[in-house]
View 1: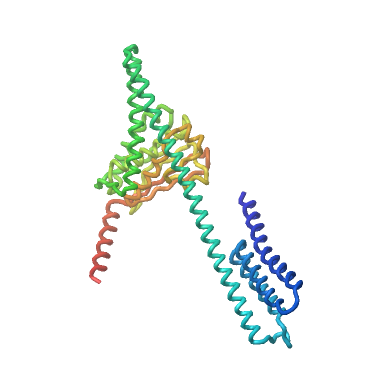
View 2: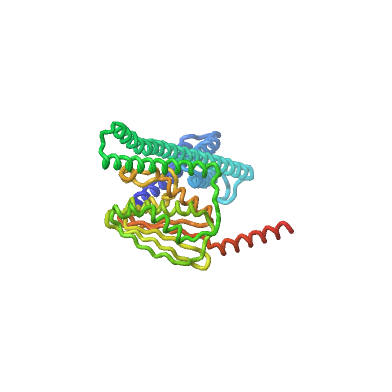
Length: 375
């Protein structure tokens, strides 16, 4: 594909510069058909027309090439006693021609760039609009599905025709779908807060090991239901970090939920907590579906999900990772995703500054601000 694209680009390049040569040649051929005092005027007008044509369709490079070829043709055409000697008036007219031709070329190049920018902006706007339309359709579907289940089971319960076991099963289904809908609504509210700049953190010193264990406890039933194998390597008594415990648990829960969702039965999910002198590192790795290389740069973007088949099969709004990145960045950390490709699992790495490192940076920033204020 890349080779074909390169060949297509080279082909268009040759066409643009070929147009410059052809336009000058055609102008000279038309001049040769004219004789008399208007011949010099004809050559200037026709060659300026050639510059206009080549710069309009070809851009800056072809326009400059046409200008050089045209100036050379005029130079050769001018009368002279010696090959290198031309009259002063002819020299002035030649310079005027070059200036006018270059002005036309640069103006056309500026027009082409503005047109290209406008077309690119329009395509980006159309892509964003299409993505939002698809997102709204997904939101409607994802909210309607659990609500339909809740309504259906509620109507069955109201008939009072279910036995005790069936009633308990119905209530569990209602609870599960209500929680699913609540999570969807909370994701939408989080995105709204992010857009409004109203996202606030309740920051204090926390133990990441406890946060990770709490997130694992939430997804443990789903892990056991799919017969997945959970491998933990969590450092005990690791240095604390400054952060919002609930929000960090939300991030880790999201990563674990994705791992459970996209890992087939009997797969493996690995969770590690490590630390360096300045950072804590949380790694969530699975042996699931993985991600295509072309999707990796967009994995943390809103309104972006993987292939449609996967979206329809597994559901979800595709907002969790975008919210996770924002939360981690609010904590002064980073989150990265890697994958060897589809079918080869995925790995997410979170890095957060340790509490003492964050305090040291804060003190240094305060000192720098004080010095700057004193200066």
